[in-house]
Length: 162
Image 1 (cartoon, rainbow, N blue to C red):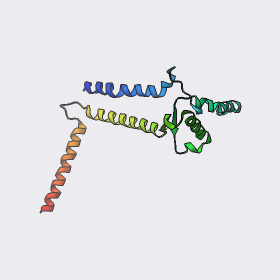
Image 2 (cartoon, rainbow, N blue to C red):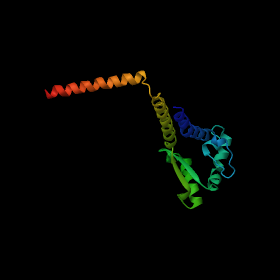
Image 3 (cartoon, rainbow, N blue to C red):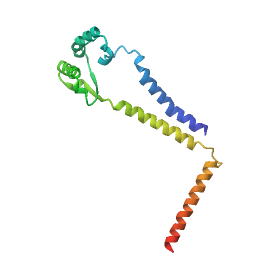
Image 4 (tube, rainbow, N blue to C red):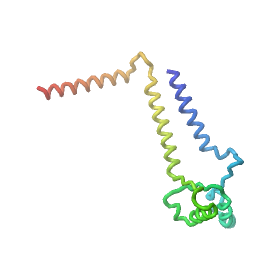
């Protein structure tokens, strides 16, 4: 019984914890080879002077970028600055080959799938880690229920035959 818990911890919980640590705190790790610029975060959204200087620098920043990752949603091209960013990037790079589309629904879907799998693993670990060799109360009641239900089906089949 202890071996199964250890394996679940080693092969399920440890990698999951490492994944979530990287997702939520990976941005704090400095990697000098890959500097990133996120327009929503780097252009000030409330102070007019800072916003104006950020928007004015936008063409230069986008044109000097090596790659564009587009967090796409259905309204993405309804926003004029998004169209301008893509147009500037594609014209400076000779086409859209360096644009990577990432739909915004992917991240919540992946996280909810991981959490659902963890919940299922936790439930199955609790259910299947019962002590072997002894019948617990719920096992006895489940087997009694199945025996009674089986007898009812058998009696109904006999009644149909008669």
